[in-house]
Structures are given as C-alpha cells and as structure tokens.
Image (cartoon, rainbow, N blue to C red; front, top):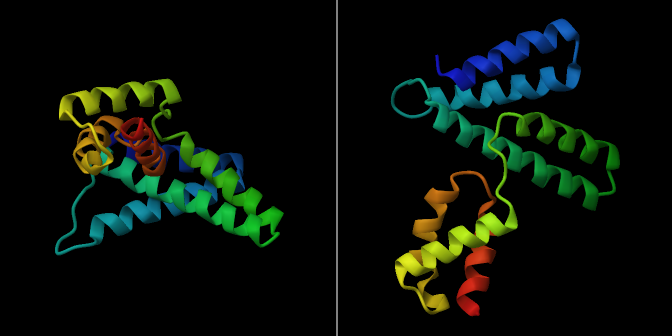
Length: 151
C-alpha cells in the first residue's frame, strides 16, 4: 500500500478514536475518491503516492470552489465547513510555492523556452507545470506566466 494512502488510513483510525467528526468525514471522502480513482478505467490498480496527491489536490480544489459558491449564496456556515475540510486535506498536500519561488520558476522556464511573446505561453507552461507539481494552483501559474511574457 502506498505510504500516503496508508497515512490516510492511519489518520482515519486516529480520528475515529478521537471522535473528530470533521477529520473523520473529510478523510472518508478523500479515501473514497482515491478508491474510485483506483477502480475507474478498464482494470483496478493501486495508485502511487503521486496519483493519490493528484486526487487529494482535486478534492481540495472542490472544497475551495464550494466555499466560494456558498459565500456567494450567503451560506456562511456551509462555506466554513468546506474551508475546514480543505484545511484537513492541506495536511497531506505539499506546501504551496511562495510568489518569489513561482516567479523564479517562471523566469527560468521562459529563458529555457526562449519565449518572448504571449503567443509562446503554451511552450512555457509545458515547462513550468511539471516543475510546480501541485505546489501552486494552475490559475496562479498561468497568471504569472502571462504577466512575465507581457512585460
């Protein structure tokens, strides 16, 4: 069993013993998403830690988007619950890049690609996205690349 999935299971057991309802519900949801990913497709398979991270990142993004939707609908209590679930998931995700670190990665990718105009954004993104590897939101990366190429 991959170590991240094992950690999720261990933390689920700990949350059950501690009667931590928020963590328990969030980890159950995350493990269900991982299991669904494992059995999707033509044959069942065990996910690697990187694939589990992709699933957890997707679940965290769903929580952020749901919180924003609840805020717009004036449902503060539901928005808070979604944010709290996102914080639980954040424990398992790699730390986010700072703005300076992201700018450095973008500048390096632009230099490597030899990009000089916004039309070459795709080539730069192909280099930046693997380097970022889930440590920054795609929209944030895209905005940084666009700003660098526009200047």
